[in-house]
Length: 220
Picture 1: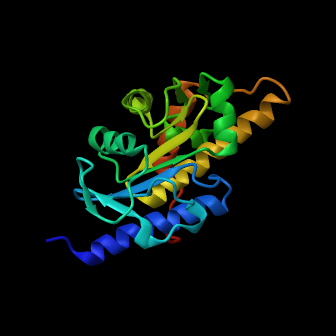
Picture 2: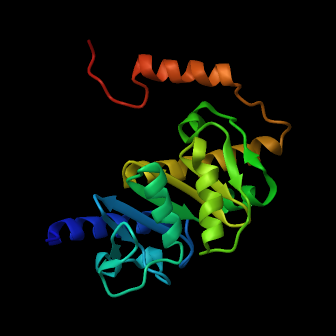
């Protein structure tokens, strides 16, 4: 038996994250989709929903095969993409947006280079998946392959996508991807951006571990 409190919590996470994306300017109208997984249950935004106004009761819940479990609205047309990421990468949440900078970079780049050490969290260099029609198995496959070495990708002439162990992480990586795209754009307007090589990225990762970078800790 499915715990209704679990369903409610999953739906609220997806709805509140969707509204936050809209408030951050990363989604416009119905463009974009969000999902979160709890065991074999996946709460996902419905097709045609305005994310800025999404309510928990509008969020659809499906099982790992995409079969409806609860809700009255059809899931997003990118359901197969979300399910594929859960199957291949054991993610806990997925965020896909048509964010302005990520989408702009997807029009002109073959990859987003590692212009700042924080992009290492996304896999350093962020690949651009080749263009495929939205909502198709071909798009899902192209994006899944692009995510092979990282947690985010750009989707050519489409937008960006990120996943994480939970929605907070996936949202953070979505914001980081947009920031990285804007950083590259601004730097490119001034000259050729320097990028971090493999050794520099490895040194950064070692320092993150040594200094517990990004987490709070008490004074000793």
